[in-house]
Every structure is written in structure tokens, then in C-alpha cells.
Image 1 (tube, helix red, strand yellow):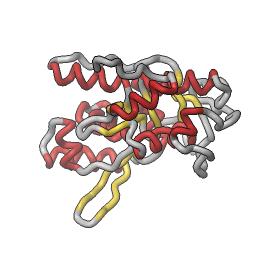
Image 2 (cartoon, rainbow, N blue to C red; image 1 turned 180 degrees about the vertical axis):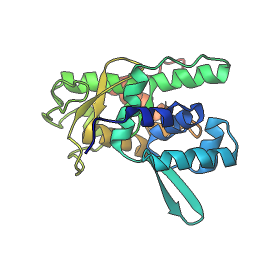
Image 3 (cartoon, one colour; image 1 turned 60 degrees about the vertical axis):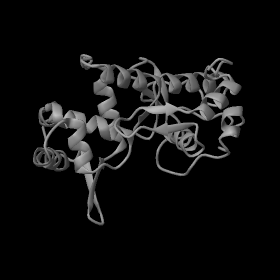
Length: 233
């Protein structure tokens, strides 16, 4: 029998800056080695191991063994949603270098929000799909009905049906940089997967920002969702 949620315990785990950096790195939805997470957190290999053990013991992170490598991922979509929600009420880290400024700008434009897109691009796509009736109104944390998948964006990405799964077909996820919901759920995940596979987006090796490629700029610009390249670009 329990009295209430023990938020303090989870808060103590997340409150360490190194562990927080590791969790944010895993928000790209990918599996990471301890050395990769140590580098992003700016700690030694031994310190990273201790931090990761704490995260695994707290059930925030799952570790799997692939040959000689131990790969770490967020344990569930609920953990990712909790991290995104905390981002909304957390202060921004100060920018202390041009590299950090560049990373911040890239994260604002397009990033992986665990299994789906986040950032300005995600909000622009959500606005377009809601306006076209593909998705009903998107509200933070709420499921949304799918209207029709007949849309130029979905046709260009060969999305004719939603992937199967237990996740809702569509739901709203509050975007921490744009402060408005973007599309999550199975449709949101299908969009990010297709855009990566078709070369519209590419992952960056050291953060969760996504680069909009020339192909992606041309395709999105042709549909009218994102500014296309000018003749001089």
C-alpha cells in the first residue's frame, strides 16, 4: 500500500547535470554507448558508468547488450514525455560558446523528440496537416483522430497507412521551444522515419538536432510547408 508518488526520488536522479545531459542525449530515440554518453555529459568513463547504473536502477534507462557493446536507451515513451514536460518548466542553459549557440539554433529548427519530430519544422507540419483535415485539432497530451491520409506530404513520403502499434494514431506533444503542440503518435513517428529514410532529414552525430537536407528543403518547399531554396542559395 502506498501513500502517493515518490517524485522526490526521481527528481534526485534527474537533478545531476551529467545524468540530465545523458537523458537529453537519449531523447533522439537512439541507442547510445557509455562512451558516447560520457562525452556528451563531459565526464570520465568511470563516472559515466556510475551515472548510467543509477539511471538504469531508477528504470529511466534500459541497457541491452549487442556483442561487446552495451547500448542505452530511454526505457519508454512515458519517460520521454516526462522529460519533454520538464523542459517546459526548466530554465534554459546559458550559451557560452558559438558551438552551443549553433546547437541551440539547430534544436529549435528540427530535432528528434524521441520517436517523432520536434521544433519549428514539426509545428509547421502539424499546422499543415490539421488545416488540411488529415488530423483533427492537436492538444497537448490528448489523442487526436485521423481524417484522411490523402495529402501531398504523405504521398511524397509514401505513407499510405499507419504502422501498427499500441500507441495512439495521433496525439499532441507540447513543443518546448515553440510552446505549442506538435504531432506525436504513430503518424508522427511514421513521418520522422520516412523523412530520414528518404533523405529529407539527416541525424547529427553529437546531438538530437536533425538537419534538413537540400532534398528535404526542395520537397517541403514544393509542398509549401517549409521555405524552399532561393536561386542564390
